[in-house]
Image (cartoon, rainbow, N blue to C red):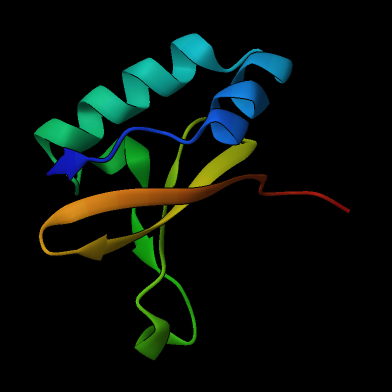
Length: 82
């Protein structure tokens, strides 16, 4: 699955949280196999919105949607934020 280039703010988030290496690994796995077990890719509720997520590491996830066969990441988030 083809990933659209990340926006500048998302790249800055990765740098700020020292996730560049983990992002590279997860995004490479994702492009090869969107259903790779370590990514835990899932369709979020409500399902009709078409928003998915995949794991970058145990703490961080990326949120995305798919349009015309291209994946656009629109948010990288701390999955366990209090």
